Image (cartoon, rainbow, N blue to C red):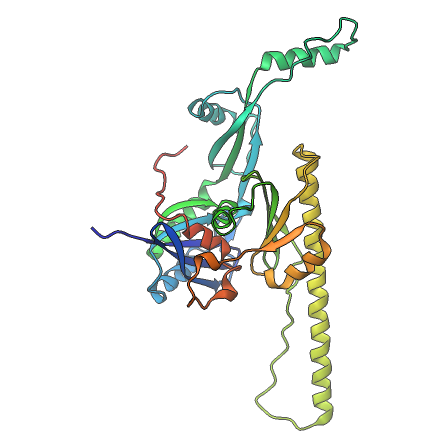
Amino acid sequence: MFFNNKYSGIDFREKKVTFATIKMDKELPVLQQVYETTLTDSVIAGGKVQEKGLLETALRTYLQQHKEASKHAHLAIPTQHSLIRKVNTLPDVGEPELAKLLHFQIGETIHLPFEDPIYDFVKIGSIQPEREKENASEEDDFTLEELTESVEKELQGPRSEVLFFATSRELSEGLLESCEEAGFKPLTAELRALALQRLLLHTHPNWLNGTEMIIDASSGSVDIHIFKDELIVFSRTMELNRSELTVDLNPADDVLSFDTKELTLQDEVAATAEITKEDKMDSYVEDLLNEIQKAQNFYRYSLGERDSEFDRIIVTGEKTQHIFSRLVERLPNEVVHIDYSSIVDIGFMQHDLLDRCSVAIGLAMRGNEKREKKKK
């Protein structure tokens, strides 16, 4: 019986799709190829696939033109259409009981931005109720509010600490159907952050052990993911400066000009364009630094991690080469990028696409995991 050992990863963005093919060689991932295709229109909007025909054509074309690609694929759910939340209000029970409790909590105490969600969860620990010191003296003065709060904590008992994940069923099924219509055989779908985590745990096993941030930067937005002790605790998409980071000059006609004045004017236009390009990149980086600060503050003050310091900031995505040195200069944290050498052969020639396709690579590394049949 033929054993499949090659897998594709497919990452969907607003107007782009990136692909990666991984071959599992004795359970070790070896990157075969990466690819990026730009679409003529936004295929994902309003929480669903709007241009199925356009997306299916792009997927089918890729599969037909890249014979080394695998039909067995793992898909990414766009970060802006997914939700990660820590839930600590449920009793300390097993996961089967937690699944039932969460089912009844959705729409009541857990409000989601999706009308028909698909969700999952992981129990990451238990929280014991805070107890008053046993040797507290009788003279201690307690207000009625403090006494009430103390009694409530005692009655509440141990609670579960749960990481809750959710996304839109309509979007997920739309992406799945588009891939199937194009000839792929989707195995799983997961969050972008988890695909990047898989990639990093293989290429940099010493990373993500503390409190760390991943910056996945594209032209108009950035995904910011925060991990603590190898667990994802924050994942958001932030819109950035929407202006293009390059300036396109109108190409000259196919006529050679020997007018010195005209040549000088062209030189001035080119110089002006270069200044504009630098200005726009500086503006982009300023926006990015602002969003990084917001994410750090949210993590510290809204998620109760006031004393946390970020061990490192990991940069990936299509704008890595443009922003990396700027972030090294501007941020007090250790700023690093991914070293892919452990998963590529000597003859690999697509190094310029690695950061652009990092999510797709992490997806393909999932290997032979199958799509779960049961639905929540």
